[in-house]
Amino acid sequence: MMKRLKPVLFRPTSRRERTPGYLLADGKTGWVAGIRWVQGGVATGLTRYRQADSFCIAAGKGTGQVSGLVSPQDVRRGMTLYSLAMAFLLAIGGSSYGIYRLDGDRWVFLATVRGRLSVMGDITGSLNDVLMARNQFLEFNEPDDAGWHCAAEPEQAVSWQALVRDLPRAHLRQARLRSTSPARLLQVAAGVVVLGLLALWLQDASSRRARQAAAEAAWRAQQAVEAPQPETQAQLPHPWADRMTVPALLSQCRVSRAPLRMAVEGWPLTAWECTASPAGLRLNYAATPGVTVEAFARQVRVLYGRPAAFNLKDGAQGGEVFFPFETTAPAAWLRDELPGPADTRLMTLLSDLQRRDIRHSPVSFSEVTPPETAPGTKSDVPVQTWREYTFSVTTPLRPELLLAGVDDTGLRLSSIGFTRSTQGQSTYTIKGSLYVQK
Image (cartoon, rainbow, N blue to C red; front, side):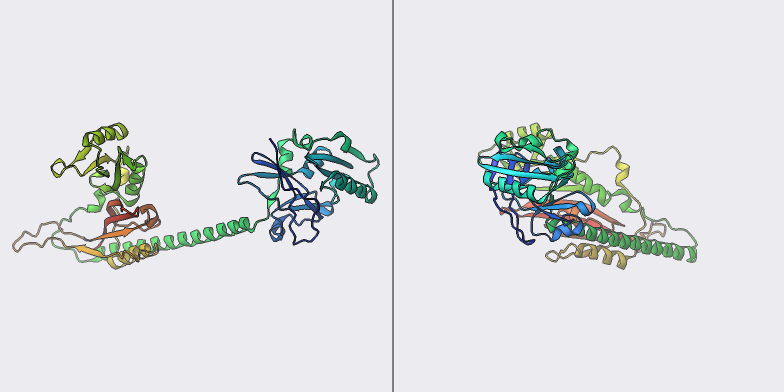
């Protein structure tokens, strides 16, 4: 059913005044009559963003181009607007005019001259209003050799729907109104800025990798020119080579927690933790009075297909559910890269985290001291060629956002934890190690 919305009888002539038009809505489609038409291309390019009206449309080309401007009211979200005058041009055209009934006692006068829209057409109002508009149009315009074609007389009471009922899809695209809001222009500008910033970030990342490669080459060269030892001493294997990379842990954690339930049988989820060893996701639910351990365990089995674990000696104040990470290529989790210099890597990681504004939870690094070699120990004990720094970060940011774009050379995460306070505040705790050259 068509819905009548706020008619207009007279249109303003000032460029800075708004033309409310006459909107006929049908679901998500709206046809607009009473558009203000002016000569020239004010509805094209950047010019349209300087108009007072909120929608525009252009018809014709070159010196014969006209532009329509309108600001219909009560436009619902998601509604697509079309010009009734453009539908008349596309369906009738030539040197034609017609008077169509809109709804109730409202009419519209539409006109074209030699295949172009007339700026004296698209007048809405009472029958007397549109008859006066027709007479003025016929007085000031001359038809082509074939004379005027009257497409609709008021006595026929032809509905405006006759113009749009069988309009082809290609004509619909031509009749569509375009927004003049600067928001679209700002979106384009914002997109350009984002692309520029992305290019700068990629350039910086490329420069960073080049500096790191140069540092690694210098380190290798320095090791190559060092005086050879009488006996080559074995080196300890790299521990980071057997630990999940940062992207692997983030990806597995995100996929594993996707189907989790915020409550099971009334027991609310209070925390979860993704760990690299054992590789999996652990959910923690708090017990709720009135719900038994058996009921919770049964529902966990139904929802997750996994068993629930409890500390029964402690009264089962909570329940745990563990999901091992599933992957068809565990080797893709691992990487054995050369670590970077200590000062450079500590500064780079700290700077990357500071860009995410972690002032509320400063990062501190603690060096893991290797065990000292006891006096008299044989010299063939493998030597450690790296240093390890552990760290912990607590933040309201999701781990994917906090670690996006971070240089993960020598960086490994041991766990990603999530807790929710009784006030509903969410907090993430990320723990890991940074391996650097010794």
